[in-house]
Image (cartoon, rainbow over all chains, first blue to last red; front, side, top):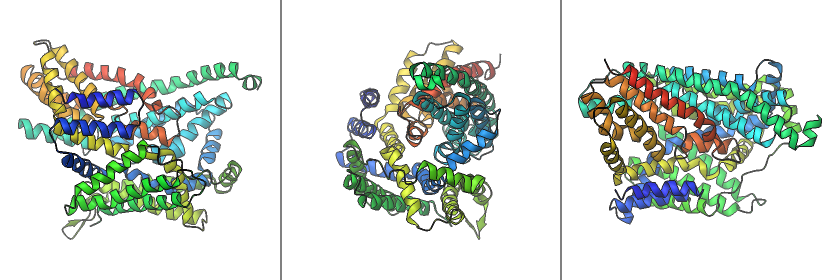
Length: 234
Length: 324
């Protein structure tokens, strides 16, 4: 049971908002010591673990090109485009993106979207532009919320879309683990099909919240306007 | 065969370029420490391949990895290059290039998908063209290079240093959060070795009431949620909770249908992924990329969805997975 101390380190560290890298490193060392690993073995575990998970950081290769197109006005163009699409509010835009993300992920196209490739350069600026068109200049709170919601549409979409696709990691993990441990022969397609009801629930719940976000923005704009006299005069 | 390792070398080169840019930036007060951070990171990416393939010392890699944590802990790296062009210049760019600006951005997913779907099955002789199960990541690497080339031609960018200054600007916003997911993956390995999973399994096993199906369903789904929040990963929670509750109780004792129980159980875990900072690549990295003041902004946006969705999963499992 002492191993749960390592979990406590993580929870307390994040709660105190200490530097996450140090929290995680400390928790890893605690876990290793409780497991009876030698200091050398713990350092080696950090080395091989880090080396083995390098592919989660591959998203940085898109940054030079994203930076370059931002430099030439990508976000401004995203705004211009949104200005022409009159009926497209922030909420409707994000709900549509959620649907696109879920459907393409369900077809195995998980690389369409992602925070680096799609949310920062395209989805978030469009969502902000739509909010600006409705409510005028955004307060910091409105901007933060809009960006957070844009990120959430991407994450919820990919999580509850990709499990419908047969050849995705989680489906293979389920069938691999269960078949090897309990001698079953689960059909991956069966497992994938049973992800559909949850995917529909996810779309209804998160999509509804995205649509309702328009009203929340309006409320925030009204509150912000009351505090900031200039905005109220506009 | 095109190997995943080549893309990781590309990442190493990008980090190295970043180190050089930081080192030569005299306006950055933290330029030496910042350059050291990116240079050590470049080393871990290049040398990491040797650790995996040829059994080079994992100890050396480990020292470098811990050095990164120390550098991050004392406040490195600082911000990257400041905005290089004014807002007016960007508006002018948007007016000049119009929707052509979207072309390189859209090329990235299109090429990545072509690699991930069509090219992943192509053989040259007996060998696969792309390293097995890495096709999408390789595609992302190729896509970035192609899109960069197209963008440079399209916008008539003369200096090859420009895109790297821009990536330095973006990496400066992300900082050490860029590699936090890798740290958490490493932590997962140490947690597993230390038996955190077994301890949690034991606790859930002891609190579970007998002969009460709904309670068993709730315990399985709640265990997936809580354990995923702690480990940051539903994949780590799944074997534990399935061995503790899913298989012996839901399938064997209550004769539930395995495929939907396991599928929905995993998705109950995904609800936990939405609300934990431990899932850094889904929650903290987007916050950094979008330059949010509140690093928990995306988690706060996802919490009101995660809870009702988790309840949906409990209900779906209870009503769909057992014959009555």
